[in-house]
Image: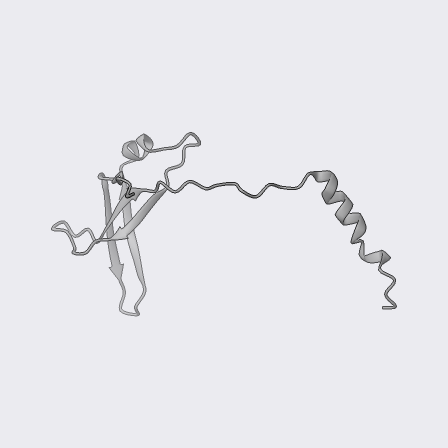
Length: 98
């Protein structure tokens, strides 16, 4: 099921391509619009995508809010077990001749 995208409307994104093949994107965002989309930590994750055609005002890219949610599936082992692993794998106790 496709999600509806939340576009960042008050922005200007223009790509500059250099003769040597390099490029950069000049970006300007209206802070008040980004604040509306900020999460509980104050971050705004956005996606910048290339337009099919350059707009009348010269915009080469557009931006929309990323809906990606990071999932923390990996649990860190308790510190006690980490200390046990360090004790077991102590390189000074390996009985190697060199």
